[in-house]
Image (cartoon, rainbow, N blue to C red; front, top):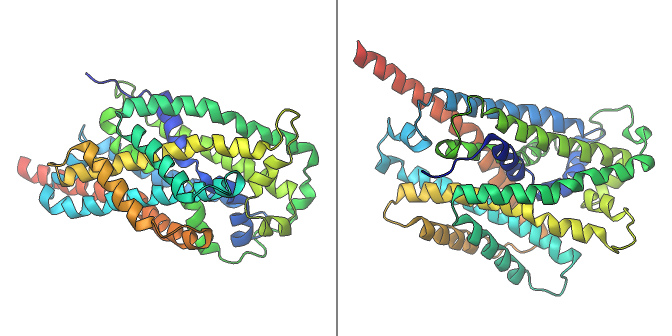
Length: 362
């Protein structure tokens, strides 16, 4: 019998999937799209994501021990659903690779200006490939180790408290924002990752009756990290500075002075690779399950190779930041639609099947 994921590890896994490279530009996104005191939107969008997680919890409550595939195929044949699985697998392969490339573009600017982006990106994908072919319990244990190696970075915000001022927040809320709708999509995508738990149902320790609380706990940790980072950023920088600075959080870290380390922002950002890696790995892991279900004849490991290769080719020409931004927005919107639509689809399927069962019983 394979080992199961404990609630403690699940909470950490959800946080690590959600927390991504968007964190470093999140304060600027909030300032540009929502205006003054844009950090408040973190709390609002976190509540929206919380409702989305609630829909996932309803699926878990009514699923009767079935996994996602068994739920859907109990109503629609697997062969009919195969194209749907393939589309989901492609979206969940392209999106994490775009996230990984976004991270590598920033890394290249920070520390490896003379190194080929293609080389950095390829090395990153090899790391992801090495981990995604492992079993989910190994991935979860690795995630827990990465969590303890990176969570300390949040406490670096304490350094900025003496230099922050409530006066910079201004008494105005959401004044001077340019595009609130686009901002909501971008910020919501920063909370994505919780939907992967739909595919983790068979691998979680079901002996714990309230294990789903771990998903909420992981989401709360993400909200606290995002909220504190953005709140301190709005108090540390002026509103105009936030709008003009590409990566405000990196600038925050750069102001920290440690005698033994000359450029601490490079160290911290390089350690952040662990978080990005987990996000990429878990999306590819779910995409692997989907492709394998659509085409059972393909071995799971080969599914990973195929998905990475196809997504790599599709995103190959996107190698500068201004080209990457619209791609991230489009696929982020698609992923947000899946995060909301998939649990709704599963709930409707469960409802139709329950009606059928009642009719057969009568």
